[in-house]
Length: 231
Image 1 (cartoon, rainbow, N blue to C red):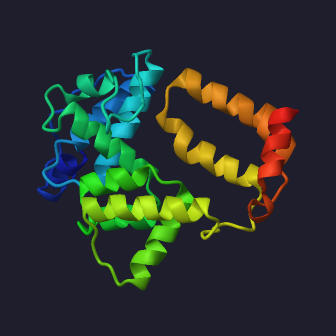
Image 2: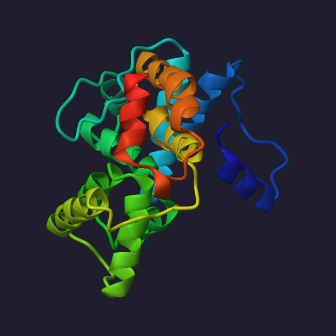
């Protein structure tokens, strides 16, 4: 669970014995202990913190602790992060921000690790759908942008959403609505409360997929959605 580097150092030093503590832990207790140990490292990439905090939250949730995974970028209740912030250099709000990074596509997350996108702008971008994040990367490439500020992140975010609503951005056009919904479930639902997650999955499985799941995104029209609502 912990002490891998110390054990390796002992082997290199020619030691045949090292002090160790043996504990009987459940899988979730082991995950929490491992994450706590990793977080003590001096230098951690934002992506490493994001994955570590998320893993710990999920383990705490399975242990039955109350968790509201709604983001607190705008200020919402969130109890597990306060527990995690105890004896931690990161505040509860900062922990929430790191967890939000798990909603970024890999290319954007790499830019955060490279310090080309700061944490706060990255959190803003994490609320964008995957297709808009991909379009954002393309826009940054075309404009030869190597970094992005909070103000630019908000401006680009609103611009991309407006263009999507106007039909100017069509990404993943060869995917069907059902396939896109599967991606949405995989990338968004892990970060919300359990009861809400179950409700969304049920509605998607029972209503959305049967009605419009086989329609291609590029062919989806308002009347398709209205017909589904009417039925």
